[in-house]
Length: 419
Ligand SMILES: Cc1cc2nc3c(=O)[nH]c(=O)nc-3n(C[C@H](O)[C@H](O)[C@H](O)COP(=O)(O)OP(=O)(O)OC[C@H]3O[C@@H](n4cnc5c(N)ncnc54)[C@H](O)[C@@H]3O)c2cc1C
Image (tube, rainbow, N blue to C red; front, side, top):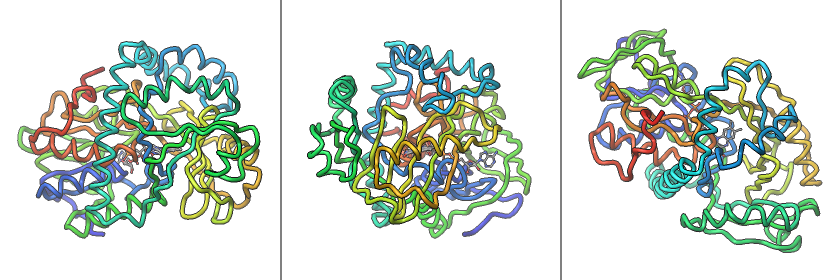
């Protein structure tokens, strides 16, 4: 990979070499611009490295659903449950939680679902364009997803969510009975009696390899990746200057795709944005751990089981604990123990644990669009649980904004100024 030298310049500089930054850099390059990426750690070093690898096009509902705050206290009582707030972070997270609560009101919820569904529709077609652009089919698995339910009552409770998805064009098949479930995925615990299969769901064989593949295409086409920490930024009418710990970078335009740290960069341009991190955990087991035929979602337990490089990744959970606290890997262990109950033949030996920082806005919508006060700076962050899923669409939208073209969909719901 090439790397830039100090005091370098290009048409557009992108901060962040995660899946959002690299996808965006490629889309800008496809519009004929010279692009460089700056990242303090390198390609796919943070959330984009260890996620579940799912292009989860069916997930159009925000986390802030009406009534969520009635359910949350029950989850919060279990410190290792699917949702947790470490006591010392209860106060710092309060302003974000208040916005989250407001986002769960029916009027805002309906707007969020509409915006998310539109972004998902674009994400699906944009991903196919991206796969073909980078000849990436070898890194893609098209095996669908199975959501699992324990008993009729749990299945019935999920129906409203599926009806909503149907309204927004998501296709799925309800599966009833243990025999029918076993035809899709053998080896499930008997407690699972119902499921919903979503055939159009796609996974990558490994999210890190996927971003590395995108980055190789970017570099092969003349793109440059510089390893440096951005510590300051100034915008003039026709240029943006970044101060880094390895020199200065000057570009005509800037894209901020710094994941869970993007609010720190946005402050250089006068914006205080409610970006928080939902920390997530997983364990990756080697090849042979289980014969997984599709992506499994245990929604009522807050985790998924997914195929990564022929092995198995068990992960999920939401810990609202900020960027500085050390990982609590007991969370990963709790998920793995549950997975061993639900898949009795799962071999849990030789696992590799990981924690990542999901970049999350209170309404579950990303920030996509020009910085409110600085037109030559564009924001692309805050994708929460869905950054991989929405990366190709975000890249196309941002490339349109940067080149003063008309985006393929209405991006007003994603404006930074909505807060
Ligand atoms: C457990 C878990 C499972 C998940 N599963 C899925 C899934 O299946 N599907 C899905 O769609 N999403 C999933 N996600 C979410 C997804 O991983 C994220 O939304 C996505 O990776 C965010 O990408 P990003 O490029 O915005 O951020 P990141 O990948 O975090 O990249 C940001 C980059 O910016 C760099 N950076 C930050 N500040 C600076 C600075 N000042 N100077 C220089 N560089 C800087 C960082 O080094 C980093 O490399 C999951 C997340 C977790 C934690």
